Amino acid sequence: MAIRVTSGMMSTQMLSNLNRNLNRMDNMSNQISSGRKINKPSDDPVGVTYALRYRAELASNEQYQSNTDAAVSWLDATDTTMQQSGNVMQRLKELTVQGSSGTVPQSGLDAIKLEVEELQKQMINIGNSQIRGKYIFNGQNYDKAPYELSGSITQYSQINTDDKPVNYSIGDQSIFQINTPGSDYFGSSTEDDNVFKIMDDLVNALNSGDYEAVGSQADKIESRSIKMQSCISEVGARTNRVELVQARLTDYNLNLTSLQSKTEDADIASLMIQATSAQTIYEAALKSSAQIMQPSLMDFMR
Image (cartoon, rainbow, N blue to C red; front, side, top):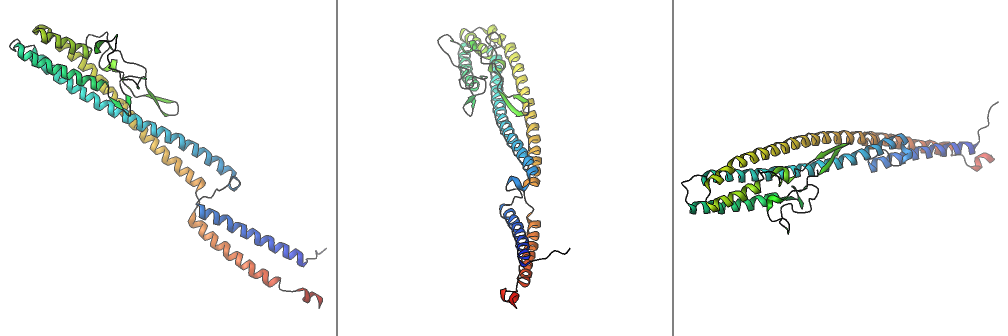
């Protein structure tokens, strides 16, 4: 049985098709103007899930990158500071050799003593080095200067710095220690080759003109220098590892950004072509609808 097609049915169908085309044009216009193909969850429910995951991973990766940048800065500052202390130790060794010679008069020993005292002040300044307001040789107590005298502490050789690690998170389940305790580098209060104890003993020996006591500090200086060099090597190894992590995080960030772009970003060139095509179709539909719906009420009354 044939179905009678009325003018109302035709009008309704035409309006439905026109609205559908108009809605399609509106969606493409939104994507073109925003540059995104997902502007609301209903646009692509599955894509939204992936997009949120990529955003969360990018945020975490950016924090890890920030942590590695801070770690490199800390390690670079530590390396520079250690190199400076190495120069002090080299000069201290030269003065010890010079002062142990029995041909140097007391006036010469006094001059050497004055320079050793200045070197000690320089070493203290190095021990209290900071980066961004944090003391690099005082473990987790980085808000306090490690080498300061107090009522019970009358000599710097009596000081033991905090040895707790300063850890940075540089990846998922990857914790990295960036600090070197001052007691490991300069020596603890129980070690004979504590750099400050060496300097104190050297000053006393020079002041009393004891050439043998001056010469006995040379071995301790050499022992401490070797330990310092070991710490410098460790800092270098840490720096190399962090730089490798930095490179990996950069690559991972590029990968995530690419995946996010493929999920969220609109293909503007393709959309422009589709929008032009949709507009042509819409205009053609308007013209054809006008032709079909031309009969008026008077035409049906004839």
